[in-house]
Length: 110
Image (cartoon, rainbow, N blue to C red; front, side, top):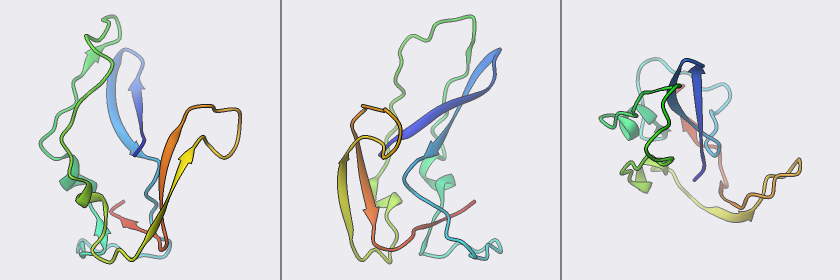
């Protein structure tokens, strides 16, 4: 699974995670009730703080290690998926990425 690290303030490297695999189902109503069919990222990353490093300082390491359970990313309604190992579909990116493509959309909490 690939995650992008981004920062909002150029003076402080405050990172947050964006998944490039899961998508929000169109037309889904979110009324505060999260069903077993919805992936809630609040529960996946809850309790794992990401360090805040001033832009003037070099981080001690480039990686952040978080313990995550893969089952938290797969809904109870899982029926099947295919795996694709390669680069992005467009552009000249040569970085190898492994995609897990589900046969039905996965709804995530916005």
